[in-house]
Length: 387
Ligand code: PMP
Image 1 (cartoon, helix red, strand yellow):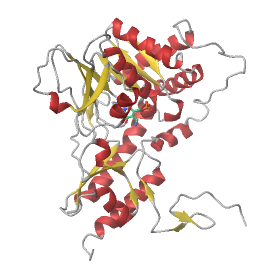
Image 2 (image 1 turned 30 degrees about the vertical axis):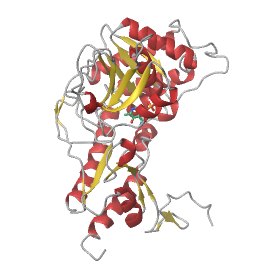
Image 3 (image 1 turned 120 degrees about the vertical axis):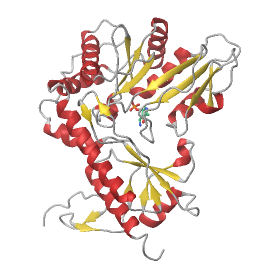
Image 4 (image 1 turned 90 degrees about the vertical axis):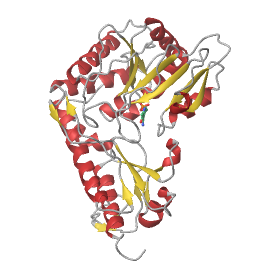
C-alpha cells in the first residue's frame, strides 16, 4: 500500500481517481496559481539562494544597487509590454500594491484642509478601496461611495480621489476615469493590466499608476508592488508613507522580484505572457461557451481588442467571471450556486453591486478551474430538468 496521496477536495481513493460529485468547489479568492506550471518549468532559472550575511541592512533610502537594479528592470518590463509610460516618472515600491493604494490616497489628500478628500470608486469595485480607506479613519480622507454620485457636483472646496481599476476587478472592463476637474485626482490600479488578462491597447500614462507582482508573476505571497508617479511631491509623500509604515520594502522580496522579472524579460515576456494568455483565454472560452447555453445565468461581455504587445487582436481572457443570475427568483445568486452546485464564489454585494451577481475566480489552479467548469456544466445541463 502506498502512502495516501493529497487529493483535490473533489477526489479520493488511493490514486485520487474517485470523483465525489457533491464536493465543494472554491471559486473565491484572487490567488493567481494559474501561473504555477510556468514557474515549474522555470524552476532552476527562477531559484534564489541568499547567504545568511547578505543584505542585512534596512532597505530605506535609494542607496542600494538591488533597488536600483529592480527599478531598471521594472522600467524595461513596461517598455517591452507597452503597458505603461515610465520615462521621466518616479517609481516607488510597496509591500504589495495594497500598501501603495493607501500611500497614494494619503499622498493625494490635502494636508490641513477643513474638509477631507472624498475617495470614490465605480461600482462594481474592489472592496479593499473602501475597507482600507475606512480603517485609517483619517481627517484628511474619507470613503464616499460610488463615483457616479460625484459626477455632477461642482463643489470647488472638496478634493475628490477616484480609484480607477483597469482592467476592473470583478468584471474585467478597461475602465477610464469618470471624474475630471481641478479638484479631482485619480489612482489608476493596473493590477491586471498584463497580457494574461487583457489586450494592451496603449501604454497607460496617468499621474498615479499602481502595479503588482501578484498578478504579473503570480507571487502574491511575496508582497511586492510598485507605483509609477509623475509628480515629484506626490512621489515624495508616498515614499514618506512607506518609510513610516514599514521602513521600506523587504530586501529579500526585492531580490526575489528581481529574479522573477529577469526570467520574464529573458524571452521578451513571450514565455510567461503566451502561457498566461493562452491559459486564461481557454478558460474564458470554455466558461463562456457553457454559460451561453444557459437561460438562467449570463456572463459579462469582454470585447477582444487589438493588443500592442502581441500585435494582433487576441481573444478575451479576464481574470474573473462576473456571473449574473437572470431569473427573478434568483436574487441571491451566491446562495443559488452554493445550494445547487456547491460552488463558492464571491457575492456581488461585496463589490457594492446587486447580489444577482457572483464573482468566480478563473485564476486559480487548473484543478480548481476544471472542477468549477464541471460543476457549472452540471448546473447548466440541469436547467432543462425539474428543479
Ligand atoms: N488591486 C486589485 C484590483 C486587486 O484585485 C488586488 C488583489 N486581488 C490588489 C489590488 C492587491 O494586490 P497585492 O496587494 O497583492 O498587490
